[in-house]
Image 1 (tube, rainbow, N blue to C red):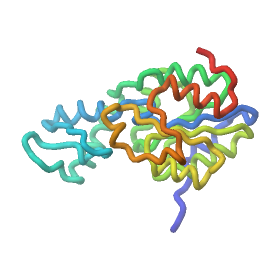
Image 2: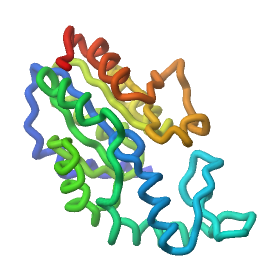
Image 3: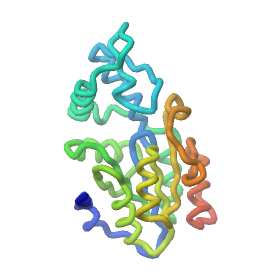
Length: 222
């Protein structure tokens, strides 16, 4: 199988090799994506019933027992990023947590959003207090995590909501500290987790302290 090419932004990053590195996902980690998508489909006459850790399988036509077709889901997903990609609420405490850690660690945003959303996603991050370099990835994140980890001699932490991304990182960059976060409380009991391999923390105040401890940041300000 041919390996996916690494995101081109990786070659342009200049990180302090002497400091720890925190790699952070966006959707359901920094951003309440499901809630934004729920508002979007509601304006299209559809409704969200969250019964699975999935996206399209939670979208229904009113009164129907089966979710919408995957093809329609993909069309709505693309349309969301055309018009509503910045209409997403930030996760509570995320900006403050990363700001407090940024005085002693480098921070990079690693997102799998569609490429066409690059500008909107950059604006969203800046508006909500995440002024950090952004890398647009596609597919499993392990290779990107490994490439980012190679840019520092310090310890690395990786935060994501999806178990496959954490497993990918575990294979590609086993020394990285891996944390799973699911910001939407409705999705938390439905998320696939492996707590023995990846630490699960769903609140940013606790996550901030856990990352600081893992990266040997003795005191995370704030």
